[in-house]
Amino acid sequence: MVNKEEILPDRDFALELLRRLKVPLSVRRHSEKVADKAIEIANKVKKAKLDVNLIEIGALLHDIGRSKTHGFNHALIGGKLLRQRGFSDKLARICETHILGGLDKQDAKKVGLPEKDYLPITLEEKIICLADKHMAGTREVSIQARFNRWFQKYGRSKILLKSKKRIEHIQKEIEELM
Ligand SMILES: [Fe+2]
Image (cartoon, rainbow, N blue to C red; front, top):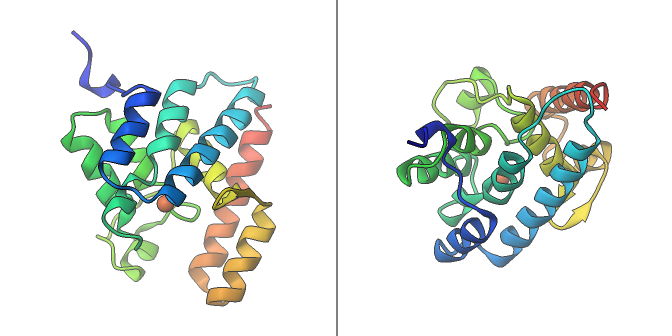
């Protein structure tokens, strides 16, 4: 019997699911780019064993919650949509931990999410979170450029500054495994 923890859809199923849930085309294109970037990063990692299949499918589905909302809550809704379908908890967690550099309890409260940590912990979660920050829509950008844009738009808020630090930390951790 397949362990429920391990149930992953394949690429075609994931893309079809996004279409069926009416995830906007721009989000689907973004998600494919995030998947390409995440796999590119994963392939450079030599000092750790990664589940590249989980990384690909997780990246494709990380924004599935945008079928319902573009607010911060799309992360939690995405996790719920995947769990409801019986998919791996690992996949659901990728949705829940991809926002900014992950959100800690205080950040979550501030943006109106249930007061809980939503921080990427596994390497797969971290790589998708990082790849997502590198893709502004379908355009690849540096982490610095991505945050500069957000600083211009929202100001140098505490939550953004904290997120930037977290992502830089994740980036360093991944690079040290290359
Ligand atoms: Fe997202």
